[in-house]
Length: 321
Image (cartoon, rainbow, N blue to C red; front, side, top):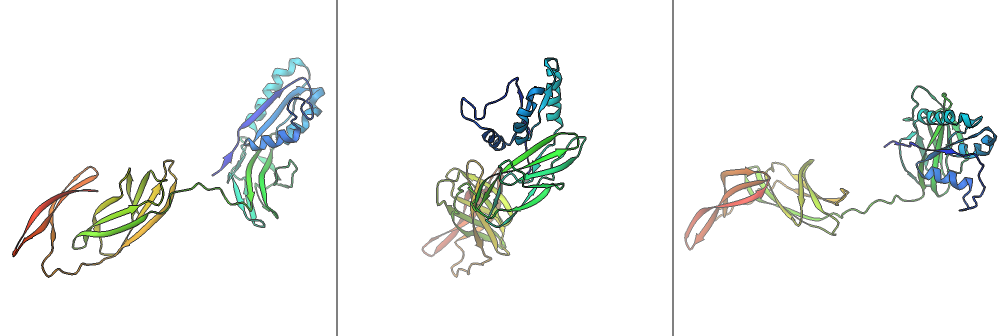
């Protein structure tokens, strides 16, 4: 997913700054580093001509620009110029918002989604370790870099446009460090069996048990089709009217409350025709079936035997559709 920035600070002052700061000890390098970490932030000092050189470094290291005014009467015009620069600067984007790689693995940085309204980006300056020093300059928005040792920091690319504006975009880079992925629900224990059958149409009873307490609901799928979600403490589901002329796969996946899916568990239901019962079937399907919302009201003929006497009676049941 493309990442972009749109943050800027207009620094309006009539005095220079202390290096380091006398209050909190901040240095220019610390301010530049923090600006990258904040997505980043470009600083536009609006100062008198006599302070222009003093603020050049802080503007450059944060990919901003100094706007100098000749006297107090020019302040409004200088502020307007700063706002125009901010509005017209390149819209800086990276294809990926965070990079992971192994030591020695080539990483491709792609800023080709960046653009300028009524202008053109003419130069890309790449700082692969976020130290403020440009490591490579290109006219192409795509470049590659190999980190030869473990690295956990920020990269940036600064871009200049032909309308005399600049901006940059930064992203975390982790080399030799595994992604910190969220913990998802484990694969549940699943079983399934055919409990009713009429030719190639069958009702499959699905049962599952979680291996942890991370799931708030469950996604049930038949082959590549999602049948829907179950909630609460439900751990059993009858799937009706399943064509079992071929083997079918049923998958159960635990879903966290935040929507993060865990590991799926899949079970295969084979096309097995039960062996005939020499005494006759104990139950037979009946043709009556009513669908009500998510449920199906159906019936079957259940065999009852008393001594040498046997007969069938109708049993109604409710199944989830």
